[in-house]
Amino acid sequence: MILVNNRKYETFKEGMTIQEVMDEMGYTYPRIVVKVNGKLIRKKDYTTTTLKKGDDVKMHHLLAGG
Image 1 (tube, rainbow, N blue to C red):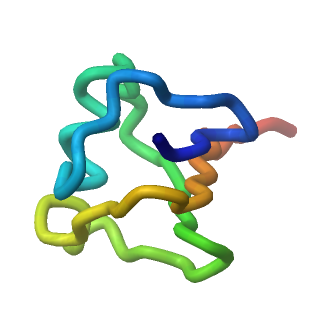
Image 2 (cartoon, rainbow, N blue to C red):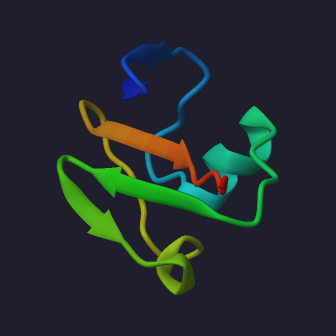
């Protein structure tokens, strides 16, 4: 199991990529900031960065306003 935004992600399977988790959870916004264990992950690395049990993942949608 991993944590995604401080919630248990029960259907996690060892070796899933960030992109797979985002797809499964329905994250479709074009501007998302992702950190794994406090480390910023670049968008180009979402499909190659694999997660392991115990990881703490933060996914935040960037909003614009004025």
